[in-house]
Image (cartoon, rainbow, N blue to C red):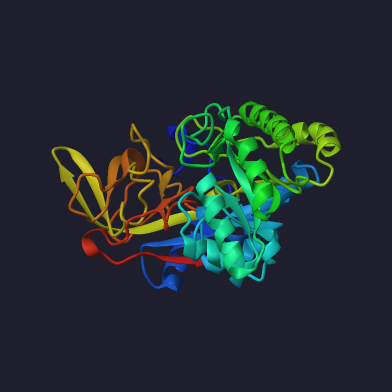
Length: 413
């Protein structure tokens, strides 16, 4: 992609300003930040942008909506600690994430633990910590009930529901299909009745239909169906619903043609619907759980050009980064047809001389490709390649051990 990111159809990356031809991250020119970090490649996360995103959401959503951060999007402890001071709760998907969440000082009653295949040791840890367990199956409920009998501790639980609808046009469908996630909606009433016999402390429901959606109308429709389903299922609950997680699904633009999501219609719809929901579920705290939307645009991945070569008329920039650091940008994390993330030469923004290049990493595989045939300023060894939209599912979702190259570092600035 060119130094003007919207030339190739990507949404403009104006949230990172440019000064004297360099991208600024946390107000620091990229070349100076690289010296401060002490190495390339690295991920950098801008705390100012995370704070601004939370503030923007608070302004657009009803005050009654509680914001939770889904740590799986970016579990870097410094990032989680920063967000813990601004959001209302944290959601984890592993014992490792649970430890990070507890280290922030967030009250255990504000932490929930979801995910299929939770081991007994994880259920035991969640019970001992006093966090909410989102049950993914009837079998998990029975195992947790046995742990409650053994420990004498009454676990706080919710039922994760696999809804009977999907989030249309979502990057990843999480509902309306056969799924390892949650309990099929038609099975939930029987599970709730059984729960009343176990002594588990029922708190509520977790209903999540999909992720990475850029269509406000689709999210509004999913929220409408979610709220209706929650009210129906509450009739079978062994106690009043006190906790209702309606998921998130709010996406960010990655590829040419993607437009940024406008959260305004989502907030307007929730504001209009909440009075009726509160009438049916008077004790319920309504939670929106977000990960990517809070951190994705606040992060960048930076690597250094170590060689440039021409092969059969095609120019390659070979860098010290690659798919082992940023699997998603390489196209090997769920893309059927590979598309480029927004990529720039971060220390040559605005240079007039342009060329078409392919950016690759140092790995011995043709899959190690960070950008394919993009227009960019002419780069030389030592220049810095920057990949935007890298704050979520970047570092932690990549195979750092592949071919035994060094791992990148992460910094919060």
